[in-house]
Length: 285
Image (cartoon, rainbow, N blue to C red; front, side, top):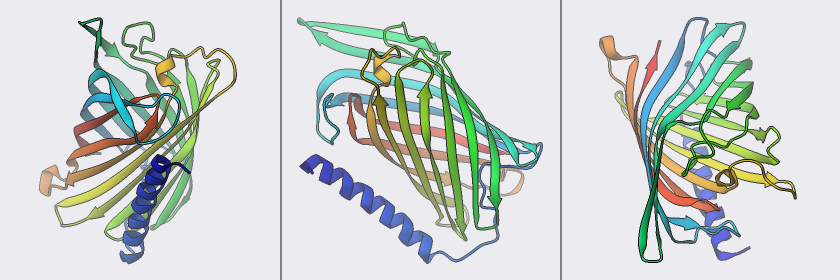
């Protein structure tokens, strides 16, 4: 294993080990574990503003932590994620995005800046709950990615191809802490590429008003030996880690929970190595 690969493995192992340690030390609780299947007419919506910045890029030939100077990328994105319960162990989930993207590169002594703004690709899915207890729950989902973002603009705002994404999701609750895990492939329809995607979240209630969490997001892209017909910018591998602080108000505003997230791309291939700051609010109804 290469030095960069060993570093990634150690960071990932440390992150997972910390989560398991917190999970085993927390006491059992009575809160519902399933974060995806609310009752009919209930749900949660998460409006947020995300700012991404990068001046370096990972290697285009191998996965690792090493980076090199590249074009500058800036993105300001408005994102809405959420879940709406519809009864019968079913819920509708969505991930809606739009924003402004800017890329600046230097060529032959000149600075060339490209900008795009508008809708990006949207994701909508149907989720079905399997086991649902006070401490453990799992579910299966089928999502559809709609190519509403233009792939012909420079820079592109979308993949240029529709995709389907079947997912398996797990929620675990142990008193003051919870863990969620989501895994599944994103299959581009007619695009010649498949992404294996995994995300995990760990949260712990550090006080009556604040919770602290960590996140992991990993993508590995597999493509056949033929011409790729989706936006080449979607052909990448990435490992991203994050931390999140959330405030839990009381009284009439207890259902409005603002949060602040910091994310860092720690390893990758064929993608910018950047950092992201997210400011949003989780609204439960």
